[in-house]
Length: 258
Image (cartoon, rainbow, N blue to C red; front, side, top):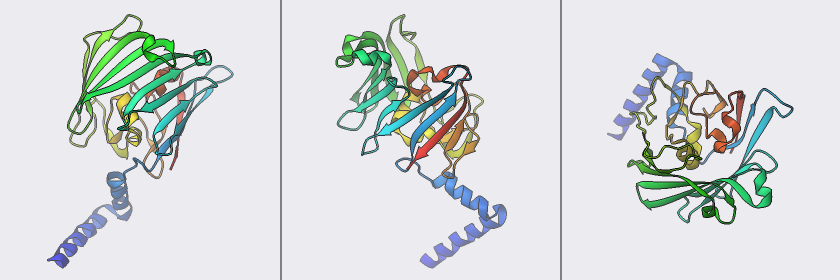
């Protein structure tokens, strides 16, 4: 019986080789079976703003020994710092600019997990680095997860005029049979999504898609990860709510490390 099963498998492979050719079978295996999480990390994202003496921007990503994202540095003072709870989940994200020189932060995002399918994100603008809750309470978002740990619903329960959020606003996210977020008029490649490299990326972008969207990139490395990102309404991370969303941004290049 075992030999029969092996022969059947070989027959299927032969049919695939005949129908699609050896290269395409290899691509099929790479596209579907390659798990990039834990094997690759984003090292650097660079882009050009198109004006000024410092037109080229570099965002460098730093990780702990256990491969947790610790910091994204994009200037002498400008950076985003990440800390985690004992369970390894994101607890705090601090967005720091020049004010950090004086012990202040620009924005602090605190995350709590009251139960297994809920995340609460509390956002503060302006305050002391050592005491985040001293800042202005600007917004509170309650998120619900599905049985795969993906955010599928969120509601803004607190919002100030300063935050730009809308109190009571509800957003929903759904996924297709391939595990990709359903977005009108958006199709997907078979290449792995850059966000799958880190739980933080997926949470911040509210995007747990398995694959790269076709309108996000058409250039990939040998692992299938995007090396150039196109501009769209779902820019990768918005790089910590920085000026990454500036309309003049172009030529976004991603570098990875193992």
